Structure formats: C-alpha cells, structure tokens
Image (tube, rainbow, N blue to C red):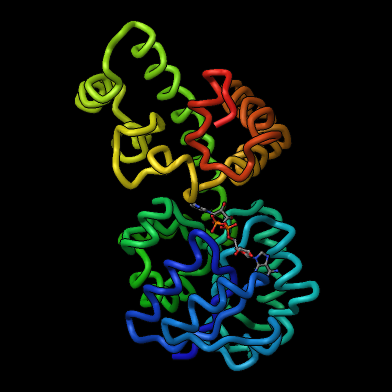
Length: 295
Ligand code: NAD
C-alpha cells in the first residue's frame, strides 16, 4: 500500500517510522529538509512538493501544527483534495479546530473521498512506542479503512462519532491535560517548599487520589523521571505553543457555545504568558514558570 506522510516533527517522525517498520511503502514531505532526510535513511521516498508526494497515494496522513497548516495543505497551496485520486483515503492526525476539520472533510466528500479526523494522545513516547490513542471522527467505513494503518502507530483506536468528533474529544482532553499539568506543578512546588522530597511526594500522590497522567508518566519536576522532557531541559515533547493553541481551541468553542470553563480559561492565560519567552519548550516547563523562572 502506497502511503504519503506529511509533517515529520516530534510526533510525525516516530509515527512514520513505525509505518516503515511495519512494511508500508512511504513517500514523505516536510518543509524542513533535515526531517525528510531522517525518514529517507529509514527507507522512505522523498518528494519535491506536496502535489508530487500525494498524487499516487492510496492513503495520505498529515501531522502538522495547526488549522492554518491543514487548510493550506488540503485546500490551499498543497491542494491534497484536488491532487489525490477519488479513492485515496485522507487521514489528518493534527490537533485543529472542529470547523477547519469539517471544512476539509466536506471538500473531500465532494470528490467522493473518505476523510477522517484522527488526532492523537500519548505524547512523543506514545508515538515512539506505537501506543498512541487515536480519537477518530468520520464515517464508520472510513474508520475501518484506516484501522490497519492506525493500529501500526497506536494501541487504542476509538471512533468518537461523525466528522469533527475526534477533534472535539481531543480539545476536551487537552483542556483537562493543561489544567492537570498546572495543578500537578502547584502541588509539587508546595510540597517542595515544605521540605518534602518531590520524588517521594510524587510516588505517594501516584497511589493517592491526586493521581493523574502528568504525575504518572510526565512529571514536570526535573530529575524525577527518566525520559521526560523535564529531565532533559524541557526539550522535545509537546511544546508550550502547541498547548497554548489547544487551550485556545477549547476557549473558542466554549465562547461560541456559551459553556463556562473557568479553569480552562485561567490555564490558557498562564500558557499565554509562558509562551512569550518559552514557546518552544515542552509544556511541562510551566512548572518552572510558576517558580518565576524561564525554564
Ligand atoms: P512539530 O512542530 O514538532 O511538527 C510539525 C511538523 O509539521 C514540522 O516538522 C513542520 O516542519 C511540519 N510542517 C508544518 N507545515 C507544513 C507543511 N505545510 N508541509 C509539510 N510539513 C509541514 O509538532 P508535533 O509536536 O509533531 O505536533 C503535531 C500535531 O500533533 C499538532 O497539531 C499537535 O498539537 C499534535 N500533538 C502533539 C503531541 C506531542 O506530544 N508533541 C501530542 C499529541 C498531539
């Protein structure tokens, strides 16, 4: 099966690597040549443009930062919807707005193409280990067509509902994640100020009612866990700018639908301040920001 993978950053590269390892023939594209080169070293084919990359594809997977990139790739300069065959399956794994996702899916449906929104959760470790959770929106038959590919990149594939439902679930999940990251950071800092070892505090809270994903696998305090961004200067991982974007998607939706999300709003504002100096760092660096330091 000929697959084209576009967007080879922190998430896209390990996801594409897992498809190559599983034996799929991959054509890849990214605006950063170095990211294309690392995939070519694993056996992928490089393309000079998006149109060239997608024209013979049986499936196209995109993993780019935000709504504007997806709209441009599918309907603007990338012209994926127009350049692909009517039988090509389109899979967008980026986290974007529900509206942008539905707009692209509706244009694809106009050409008879199957398209799903399939944002992910599980972080870069989940992408590397192929244990991601896919939250999928679209027609059931399109989800089944995509399943053999998604299963090579993730462990849990959940059909959330029609087009845009995957993005809705992802937006809610990431608002909760942002709130948990700030809450966990506050609790660790308070314990530290009281003289308790943050490692001991983390271990005890992990078996108590404060337990959550940020404590269990993504501790924001440096030196507590190996393989976390906090233990490598907050590099790699899920950037502050991307978390800020996701919290913004949640607030736009909350305002449009008149849903009160006071904590989501507050945490979005914290990340807005933090992103001014540290947007490129992992989002767990909010721990340092709360100490009054730029990580
Ligand atoms: P990233 O910035 O590391 O990677 C994005 C890649 O897209 C970059 O390599 C960039 O060069 C490329 N790109 C941008 N515009 C392009 C274009 N027009 N054509 C080709 N390539 C283009 O971001 P990431 O961390 O990999 O995240 C990607 C998406 O996944 C985002 O929507 C993010 O919110 C979501 N996400 C990230 C994580 C995480 O832990 N990093 C977890 C879940 C979901």
